Length: 264
Length: 352
Ligand SMILES: Nc1ncnc2c1ncn2[C@@H]1O[C@H](COP(=O)(O)OP(=O)(O)OP(=O)(O)O)[C@@H](O)[C@H]1O
Ligand SMILES: [Mg+2]
Image 1 (cartoon, rainbow over the protein chains, first blue to last red):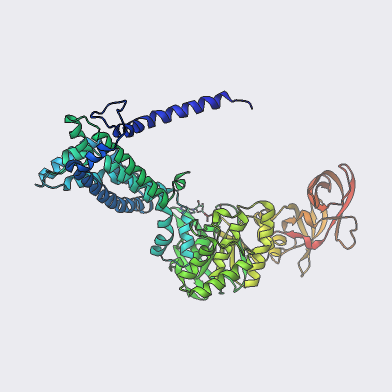
Image 2 (spheres, rainbow over the protein chains, first blue to last red):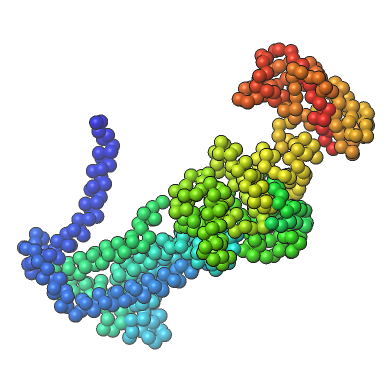
């Protein structure tokens, strides 16, 4: 068999990229299984003791709980409003479409820290400040919203309108058409958007740091605080847990819509 | 089943007047084609009938009931789209069931009607397939079935065959026509393919620039076009210029044409002394046995193109006039040969 040098180079390149992307993840997981005291490589032995330590840490477990709650609420709110905004923008906003689109995407374009500072000022202006986590929640919704908006927009953009007309010609009202035809067909976009929203919210640092309510903290902020004083493998265990949760989210998502439907 | 009537329907998009007072009546059970070049407003007319566009002016009546401003879902239409527009997330069975569910038809009857219609379009056994698992022709038949299963009063089709390959397109023409006849449904069919319109329709509506140029049976449109533009659009044409010498009451005229004196047929508006242009279709020319043909000319063969079931021949007659003839494939001649051609007076039509 003749070997194609171009193909060989491509394969080597692709493998190198994968190693580059995957190595830190693999390393973190290995570090979290360390039986030694320090966050060092090579590890001294294999154990789950740091996962145990994580389980027993009030601070970390609370932070995980907060992060989950904030991400869930953000996903829910952004999911609904992002979808509705995308429908309005693509279907009904004719002349203003470009401007509206840009406006909806602004949180993506403006550095997160600016959004955080602006929102912090605003919360103090209206007299709430950081007494509750409300500012934190709003910040997360603002940042996750564009992900839903963008994904649903592109699903709607590629949508063949004659499908809706076909539905109308068969006797379905506009509302029925939306429920039976449009929504099922843009569902992959909605779910992808929500998945992004959830993962992004879980990951947000700047906004959480500035806007977290008194006595509450999210996982990335807690991790940051922890690593300033302690350098033990608990941090790696937390990271491994995040990775596992992300994988679970993707698997659930795959069951729902199938990653195959994201291919073009 | 019902009669459909358009009264002076006008439609504009911005400054563009797309439909200029369209008047049309389609009888119960009739198959009418809207034929015209791209951009003449065929789709717009159909979409006004369907209720996807609303005319600026005029009425659309279904069995005498004015539905001009009624939403499409309340019109009792069935529509077949050029892209088929099958719901990709539903199986064939569910696609067909959709319209029946909207009409609150109980499950057993839905099942029965879907089975009936699938039998008609020869797709029994495909119930559980998704549209993407079907060939183009099969998708086309599902689209047809979906529009028919709801037993609408009018069936609207917008270039349903445009995406099929040539052989399949020929089969589907007869298939759709046959199905329409069996069901007895009123059908409006949009196409820019004149041969499609001719073989399928009871009547053809020729449209140019948002106006109806001519309405008539396929034979009228083909043999007795109202203008040179219609004649050229509907098929291959030879045009002969001449002056009317004499005219009989039955429309037979004697013409002093460029190629010599010819017998022709003229509409009532033509009288002796007029200068006219006549249409002579290539397929109405004959060679060999010319008995009974009023017009006979010697001609010289210029070139021959073999078309499979016929030959397309360029001839020069009457001192250098080139005309095109479509002759049977057994026409044996080579360029340079002298032949005799003939055509009947009925096939020379003076354009009004
Ligand atoms: N939604 C619209 N907005 C603006 N102009 C339109 C719209 N729909 C159609 N037109 C214009 O109206 C004219 C007629 O369009 P229509 O689609 O009816 O043509 P058609 O006869 O179906 O042509 P084709 O054979 O290409 O499908 C065209 O000039 C087209 O550009
Ligand atoms: Mg069209």
